[in-house]
Image: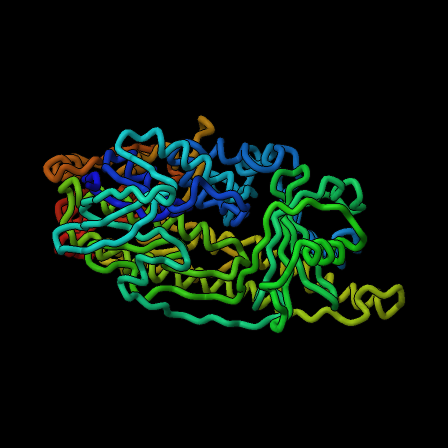
Length: 557
């Protein structure tokens, strides 16, 4: 007879979305079970770029410094460079701070890059280890790797599911209030719900469109035999092939990806083929050890038609598929978890009506469409670039071709990797949880970002005189930010929050500069660090808190 378990949330999948969700729910004392068919966290490098906004969320949870210490050595360059071959002629480069330099570098930045954290170049396999370790520390979280979902039913009042051990077939009957499909691109949860993809796929490009071969490998001689300055990511552009490689450990491990011809029989590729292709990209023969290899398809910009069906939610790759230009897929998945977690907890704790959960689809679907669109733009920018036939020639024509490529690629690398607008500019305008004030945020743009406190977006960042980030003063749940030397009366908000069971912290910052940045003396910050409301007094506190928690009240502008 099968054992049974009752939890509040069943999480199906242990990638970044599922693990982040477990961390967020665990910190709110929500009981959850996470199951994943794999024996443990990821072996392959997978995603390799953690954006600054994701790092801010890791900072909020207290382990951004751990993430920054993982992957590359602290002094390893994080540059992105474009070359004719890995050992060939450099065509373009974007120089970026090392992990060791990042904490000080961010304090010297302003404008678009005013932030608590810089991006970090680290393979997903390391991120998952950190997320797993912290989720394990949460008393209300149970994780079972090597277990998979067999079946589930949404009864209307809860979820009834069966999970089974991959190794011995042992089963567990699970009852949960809600279930979350975090089970990746081939999501069984999504298939059973009948939720279809929207968007587009099948884009064909010279690069990042069509069949790709991924090889996780060791190349101990890569740096010693490479005459070019060290980088984190190397992109090969030549008429013969298109490929890129990312350093995994800064020593000998790399993630290598190469575009294959549409008619290539990728299912028949051997390790000998992978070694030959790598040597072509490297520019000369080199010994490598292959740790794993697989083929995948680039050219997706897909978002599910619905992130929710009854008591079941989708997120991460189960909800959106990206071409990995810009590194947006994994980062979008993390923010899915950040958005969903506080809403689930609020409903399960009786602080908000179930209608609050409807906002998850409304807010995250639009963001996923936005982000897949940006990734598609970046893929077009690099994938549709034609490498001239004479690019590698030792001739005046070759020199001219390299000059043209250098000019284009130096522009492209900044379009794809200097993206504060993509990173910080995501907004939830139009969400019923956002109390608008009649103002409009600056236009959405990939490569520029103007901090503003118009409700619906990320709060403007500032460094405090004691060297803390303003974000470090925010509460883990709701924050009422009170600004300016003349402290506004917050008693109405505090009284209403107490009566509603809402965990609200009042934070006073007397700085006139921060008041000018936010343009209002009172600002309500959501648990996911989104501006929910701003105003001049607490006269509408009851209506404000009711609306931002999914109630029917509407605040008068």
